[in-house]
Structures are given as structure tokens and as C-alpha cells.
Image 1 (cartoon, helix red, strand yellow):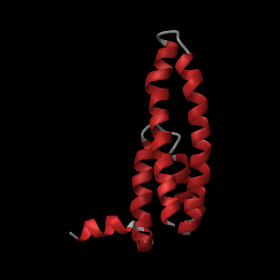
Image 2 (cartoon, rainbow, N blue to C red; image 1 turned 90 degrees about the horizontal axis):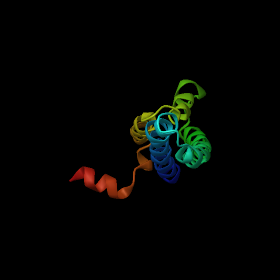
Image 3 (cartoon, rainbow, N blue to C red; image 1 turned 60 degrees about the horizontal axis):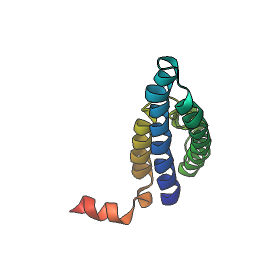
Image 4 (cartoon, rainbow, N blue to C red; image 1 turned 135 degrees about the vertical axis):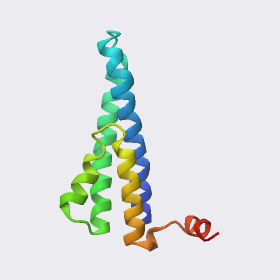
Length: 114
């Protein structure tokens, strides 16, 4: 579970970063500046990363034993709204650690005791 959680957290940050770049930089540059170079570069990268996000999110939800609705669906939709993936990642991380304490990284557990 620890590996699945780490993979999901990394991909959630990547998806969120690319979505912010797409929505707040590339799209205004395309429609206001009439330059679609960034959109043509960032869109496919975000799309690919979002597909990986979906697979890893579904895998994580299955390992955690979550219901399909609303936990898994909410987790999967987190990559579609700008900045939501950051909040969903944090929510999933906290919830996994509450439900499955063995998923905590040993280094993190030692730091929390101090």
C-alpha cells in the first residue's frame, strides 16, 4: 500500500501542476496572445499524466478497500479541476494513514513521535 500511495501522490502533483499550467498559462496565451504553442505541448502531457492518475488512483482505492461512490469517484475526479488534485492527494494520504497505519513511511512515523 505504501508504494501505491507514493506513486499516486507523485502523479497527483504532476497532474495538478500541468493542469494549472494549461488553464492559467497556456489557455490565456492561446486565446489572448494568439499563440497556441504551449497548449499543443502541455495538453497531451496532461492527458497522458491524467490517464496514469486514473489508473493509480483506482489501484489505490482498490487497495484501500474504498467504495466506488463517493470515495473512488471523488479521488478520480480530483485531476480534472485546477488545484483539486493537491487537496484530493492530501485527503487520500490522510485517510489512508488513518485506515491503514502500516502504510506510513517508517521515517515519517519516527518524525511524528519526536
